[in-house]
Amino acid sequence: MKNVLISLLLLVALLLFGTSGYMLLEGSSFNDGLFMTVITIASVGYSEVVPLDLAGRYFTMVLILLGLGFVLFIVGRITEAIVEGGLRKTYGRYKMQKKVASLKDHFIVCGFGRIGNVICGILKDHHRPFVVIESDPAVAQPIRDMDYLVIEGEAADDEILLTAGIKRAKGLIATASSDADNVYIALSARGLNPELYIMARSSGQEGAETKLLRAGADKVISPYFIGATRMAQLLLRPTVMDFLDLTIGASGLGLRLEELSLSETSHCVGKSLLDSQLRKHFDLIVVAIKRAAGDMLFNPNPQTTLESGDTLVVLGDQANIKALVAEL
Image (cartoon, rainbow, N blue to C red):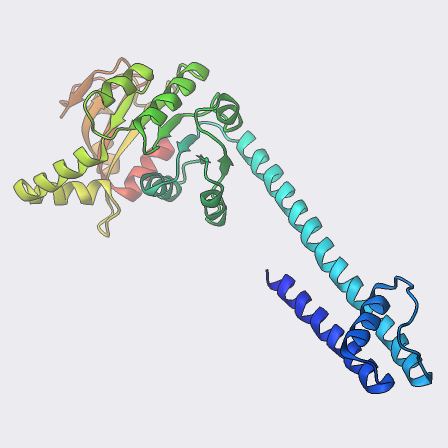
């Protein structure tokens, strides 16, 4: 818009300059001077409506050169806008698709509303790869400005999900504002990847959670229910909630509640919790153990044997957790 306004102002200035020149040098009327200026700039070759003397001819030559320069300027700016804009958009799309194609064990966030925005921020803070699917082009551009990978389109579309790498993804989060949209997303995602972990947002209306689970969602979350429950717990158990905030969220104390998976090659596999010496070497408390089959052991005793595929829920200093992750 700025370039267009500048071009229009230059055109008006050039027309006024030419018209004034013919009026002063040749004594033409405003209309005749304007006509002479337009046909001179346009180089259409119409006959002169005003007889030109030597000064008028020199002025016309100057006007032709100015008009030619103006035309070249306008054509250049338009070409620049079209070519550079098109190339930038094409290159940006190619670069984005190349990055998405290289993702593995990533997360797909469907919808970038208030909830999707927060989820993406947390995933970024924890250095987890993710790609956003957004149907609104006006929202997609700000996502790019945040340096997030984004694909424009409907998240329930199989082609869009395949482009987002759903076959290689670790999980999908459906955060659309409509329960129906999230149901379609879950159905499409489950059909393309039966092993995918799917989390869906629910409005909290009666029957919504059941439908989302039937559609293939592994976990259904109602932000309204969670928000209300949290507010109530802050009233009833403020100390407990403060402790959870310290361990789950970022805190200056460095205290963290984290989950760690045991691979088959881990030195802890086959040992008891006591013999693994996690508490002694890393000063970490094992709060719970989730077996590969899904069973959860809370506050396990020291003689509990660690198995391949176990997920340990540990509490301790963040630096010690990182050290244990490096060893596991």
